[in-house]
Image (cartoon, rainbow, N blue to C red; front, side, top):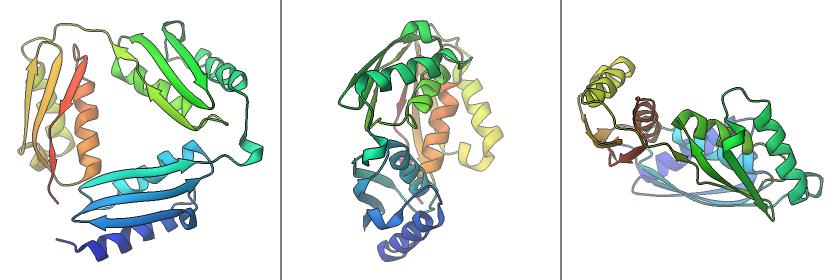
Length: 217
């Protein structure tokens, strides 16, 4: 088990290692394995990259993000320009049903609403928006169309987890109720926590995932 000081040192090293980040703008505090990030970043894409970098560090139990995006003058765009850029990006993305997604931009903050068939479409829409110049934040309110999952979906999810990491899958229980997958048990890292959730979302018929997994390094 790493001490908080060791964990902080490794988090800072990972932030400095990532070329997409300016570690000098990021403050890091660690308390009982929970990492608090503070500071001001130039773009929303950098904020996302910061969270992913911390997730890669073994021993992190959870991440609290208090990072603000303060755009440099060269990154400023009007809300109309941002909305137009997003709609164009959606139109050119084969895996995003752009005709079913509504885009609202207010002072650089993007809100997505509508209904899609699969979680990967919801995820793709968010991935496309994050690096758009001028975006300072995102609320992904897209819903996944509800469908009744088959009685074998829980087993299929667990089989998928076993393919990824056989030992870790032994500590995870999957319960499917209607179109909702409930995940319980333990994982070793924050990255595993996210990966298991993504695997559950990939199952046919799943429209909601309740992730109750605990991170225990």
